[in-house]
Image (cartoon, rainbow, N blue to C red; front, side):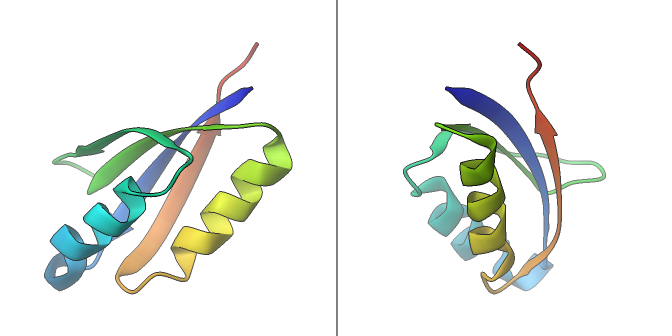
Length: 75
């Protein structure tokens, strides 16, 4: 199992809906709306690093997502 933290910027008018849509995805283990440089933090668990890449590609296509930064846990 590979764990990653995905930091996300969301357009202000889309924050609630987009956050809710990402939070529902199967890979998401924890989700937080935050203040500061990012608008949301998602902790995800996947089988492979390729699956992390696919997750990020999927959410980048969602309306309102303007930027993502992914940090992968070291084992």
